[in-house]
Length: 191
Image (cartoon, rainbow, N blue to C red; front, side, top):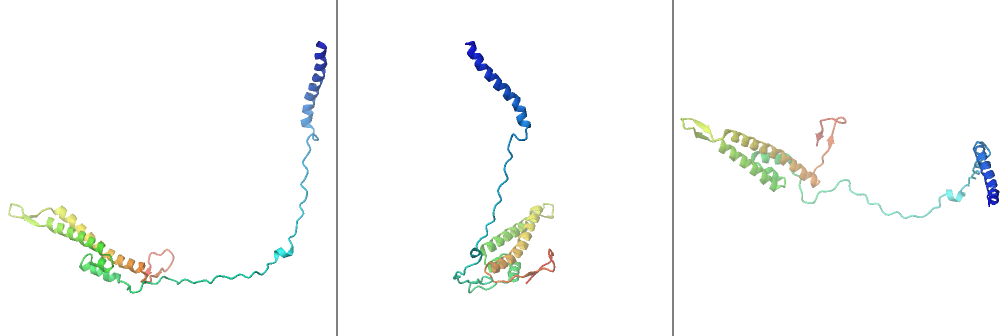
C-alpha cells in the first residue's frame, strides 16, 4: 500500500512543484497572453443615387382657413364708458357697478357704505354730559366707522371704473394699446 501511495505521490508532487515554479514566469512573460487583434476595416457603402433623389408624389393639401385677427363682439353689445361708471359711483355709491353690469357688487358696496355712514353718524352724535356740556356717544368708534365709510366710497369708485373696463375687455368692445417710451419704463399710455 505504501508503494501505491508513493507512485501517486511522486507525480503529483512533481506537477505541483512545476506549477508553482511556472506561475511567476507566466505573469512576467509578455507572450503569455495574446493581444487582441485589430478590428477589420469597415468598408463604406455608398447609397444608390435613387435613394438620394426625391420622387414627385402628388399630395393634396387641405384648405387653410385663416382665423380672424381678433375676436368680434357679440351683436347688440355697446362699450361702456369707465369714467361714466366712476362718476355714477361718486354721486350714488354702488350705481357705477350697476351701470357696468354687476348689480350684486353694486348693492354690496352701497350696503357697506350705508352701514358705515350710519354708524359714523350714530356714534358721533352729541349727547348732554350732565354738566351742561355736550359730548359724542363714542368718538373712537365714530372715527373708525368714518374711515371705513371713506374707504368703501373711494374703493367703490375705483372698482366701478375697473368693472366697466373688464366688461369691455371680456366682450371685445375696446382696443387697448399700451405704448411705452422705452423698455421697462414705468409710464405707459392707454388709448
